[in-house]
Length: 492
Image (tube, rainbow, N blue to C red; front, side, top):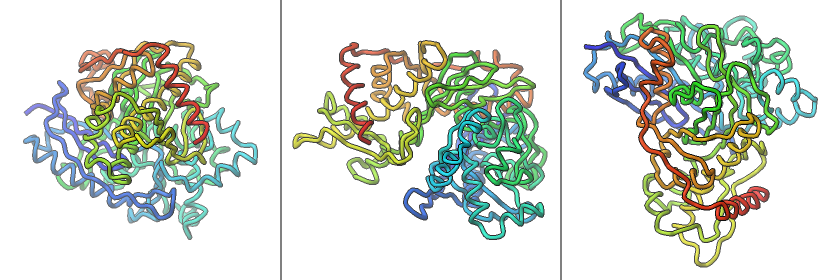
C-alpha cells in the first residue's frame, strides 16, 4: 500500500478528515458535526472535548473506509478555525472554559476600551490587524479577566492557551507539543509580523501572560508526533499546520504575488498573496502571514465577510423557506432577478472593509410581489456583493488588477452564486476540481514537511481546474446592482 497523508480540517461547524495519496486522490473522508453553544445573544462557544471527540469520530470513519493501514499514514496536516481561543490545564488537559469562537462578539467593550486608550495604531502596525472581537487576543483577555483562578494557574505554569491547531497538536501528541504556526499566530493580536514572535508589549497591554502561549513554528515542519491516539500508531509526524484560510490559499496553489482565492464557508474569506514582505492596507483590510516555508515567510492581504453560507443556513433554519442548503440554487433560479430586493447579511456585524460590529442584517425593497424565490436570490447576491467590496479594496492596496479569482468551499459548488460573483466583480472565477482546498492545503504542507512533495512547483503541477465562470452582464447593469447594494449597506 502506498504512503498517504492524513488531513484534519477542524472547522466552525464540524471536523472533516481526509486521507490523500500523493496524486491527490481522496481515499476516504469522514465528518462529524460539533455543537454550537450560544450562552447569550452574540456569544458563541465550542466545547473542547466535543471538538476532540469529533476528530476521533471522523478519523475512525476515514481510516476504516480507506482500507489503508494506519501505519501507511506518513504525515498529518492540521488546518483549523483560526481565531477561536482556548485555555486548558497543562497536566490534566481539562479545559478551564469552553473555547470562545471566532464569531463571538463578547469582547466588543474590550475592543472599544483599547481604541479609546489609543492602542489601535500600535497593534495595527505590529500585527496588521484591527481591534475587533474577531481576533484571539481580546478573547484571551476576557478569559483571564473572567475565569476564576485562571490567571493564578497561568502564573504557576499550570494553564496553557492557544488556538484550535494548538489544542489538536497537543492532544495528538499526548500533551507533548504546545505549538502553533505563524499563520495562526498572526491572527491573535499578539505576534509581530516582522519578527514572527510573540510581542511582550502587546501581551502586556492585553494582560495575557506570555508563558501560556505556544511556541511559534513555520507551516511545514515537525510540530510533534502522535502518542496515545486511538486508531493511530505512535510516531506519525504532525508536519503541516496552517489556519483554514491560509491553508486554502496554499491549497489553491496561489504561490505568486497577486494570486487570490475566496473560500465560501460559514463566512467568505478572501486572501491575496502579496509576497515576502507585509503590505499595510489603506482600506482597512488585514495584513497577515500566509505561510512560512523554511526561513521564508509569505504574506497576504485578507478581507472577511462574517456571513456567507450562514445566510443560507438562516433561510433554512430561521425562515424555513428551504429544507436543505442545496435547494437554494433551484429556488433562486425561479426568478430572473431579485425584484429589487437587497439582503445585507450583517447578522454579526460587517467585516472588511467596513468593520462595523454594530451593523445588523437588513432586507430592503420588499413589495407584495416579493416571493421566497426573490429572497433566496437576494441572499446569494448579498454573499457575492460583500466580496466585490473586499476585492476592490485589495486591488487598490496592492496596485494590481485581479484577473481571476480562485474559489472553494461548499458554496462554491453553487453555479448560480459563482456566476453572480463573476458578473458583479467583472472578473474570471476559477473553480478547482477539489473544492475542499482547506484540507488539501494542510495536506500539501504536511507533504512538504515530510518530503512527499519537494517544492511548491511540484504542488502547482498537481493542482487541477474544474470550471471557469466569465462575466455575462454589462457595465451599466453591474453599476446599478452595486449602487443598490451600497445604499443598503449604509443602512445596515
